[in-house]
Length: 293
Image 1: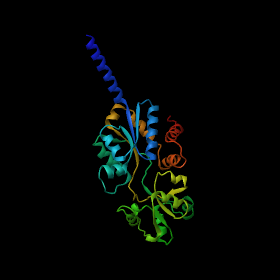
Image 2 (image 1 turned 180 degrees about the vertical axis):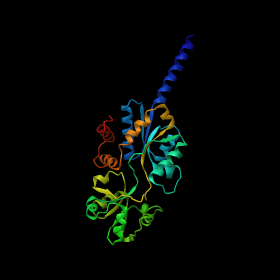
Image 3 (image 1 turned 180 degrees about the horizontal axis):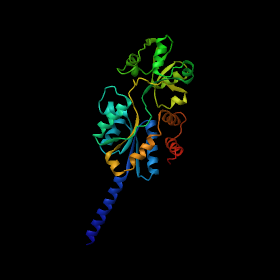
Image 4 (image 1 turned 90 degrees about the vertical axis):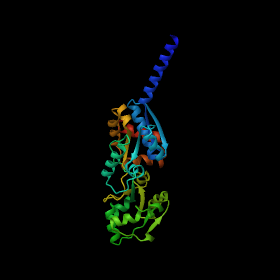
């Protein structure tokens, strides 16, 4: 009888532990600043709502995606273009809305649910100094092309990869119907592009739309009014099984997603990369400022 009671107690304990583990939400994140901020923000936010949360930030992109497909990660923020091109091998040119719908459909077949996309789109972009935009009136790629075609002398900086890649600099000029001579384009490491643009060594630089140096250095991103660059809308992606276990999770994460845009993410990134604040403090401040913590 004693042995039976011990066995039953052990089974009950195991069941309780398994139930607790099933209710825990594992939040993942990639290994760069923006993703680490989002992982911390999401973890703190969900914990404040009463969820049991485990955070696993700092993972490589492919490893993180595989971990989610395998059920080791419940939730993380992914970019629409990354899923479309890297995980689903779709190379056709799609609008931002089409990109979102396509990855939502394709990943849905794998048990992964794309929630509401944020307004943050961490894609390639061309930027100028704010003072130059005010002086020239060039605030879009179409206006940039018009200025070049009208004979305005402008110098450009970009990394060597974008200059050479098949969906990079040459196709961009073709899409917007302008031509810049090779001598007006300086190729350099991505980090040096920001410095060259800040210091006035070039007029236009290739940037990433949510990079913290954009607001820190008073840059303005030129509107890609023909949607040349692939969309990389920042979106919470969660396993269907996790949504089934946590019915309120979709609404909660959509509320957080609605608060994010390029300027917000760039500012948060700058606080970490430029002002050297801690990731945890930056995430907590954002949640507090938006009455989410």
